Image 1: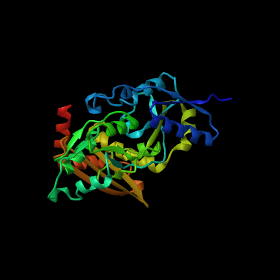
Image 2: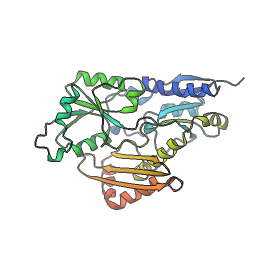
Image 3: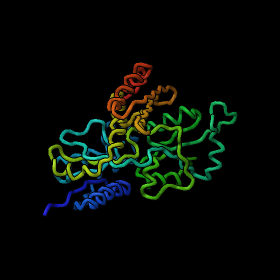
Image 4: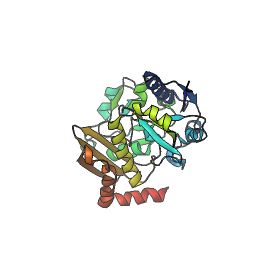
Length: 316
């Protein structure tokens, strides 16, 4: 009898939900598995903004070590948290069907009151109240300040439960969350609205399973979990990120979507203060779109993005 696959996961409610989803999907294929909970450094330090930690893969490297040391057989991650270059000895085994990729704004009070203060076209609004918005994401901060330069951004760290609690306890007007994170554990508040204008982080809303290189038996068992469309779109988005800067804690956004037989790609890079923004859009047939992320990044760099990328690098 084969031993159960050991699934490594962080201890947060969301991480355990994602790992449990993988365990249930494996069970549908009559493959036994068990969860192994491992605390990550990203969960221990809840005060330092991610972009000041100076470490890529802050939420993945503890699990990477457990995987390489054979303490677990696979690890489950929110794909947006995974570095564009996987650790040596680790490879991607599957990308699950993608969830909601959008960012949402959770209001402190009545959503209607907040909506009245957020003009649909703030650049021509006669009344621009100075609101306080909470987020630890440099990407969300840059996009928000680009649209609302008169607002104040407060740092908000912790798992989704902790961040919702902090929003309730602090004198902030609203906070920004990934929709998928709240929806998966049934914590999306009624006073939340999707930010359709905000481009997501590369691979946001996707769950990835990784295994040790050379462990073909485990990789084969995970193959049934792989969603080809999600795998292609997230690869494109990660290629865009890697070609520009290579890190997840940067004001870079990307979204690839498949409609009929075409891949529609949108990406951007902003200065940290949100004042500068360069965008790119591309459309290619699915069969020709494998390298569209890299091509879009090169095009963006050639059309003004290089200056912003250099500015971000020099500030690190």
